[in-house]
Image (cartoon, rainbow, N blue to C red; front, side, top):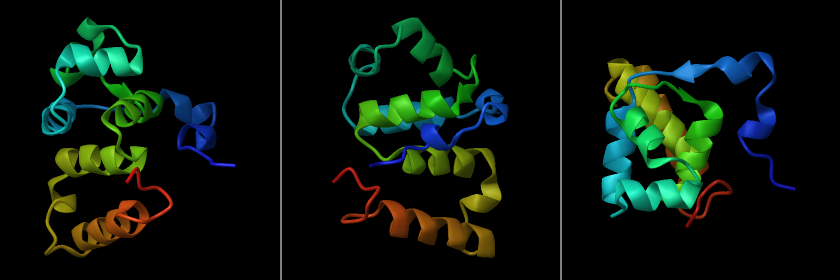
Length: 119
């Protein structure tokens, strides 16, 4: 049985939102070579809602991040970490202890051949 990120979210956590991460979602979508319409079709979401996420007009829930990750064929953890790294600059720097740990964690958990890898 595969346990997804959403399976681990409790009722209290379901209101958790990540703000100001639209640039990350847009960059990941463009890197995947998908249009806004193509991604919205893949995840069964309204194109205008997805556009609002990308333009930081809506904060994303963990469930939304997981759906977008699936549409991008990425592990949800990768998308979540990229969103957090964008939001908190210290996490982007491999020179900081925390940033280095985050990068190592993403590589170990989501790198090629790992259990969470979509490759």
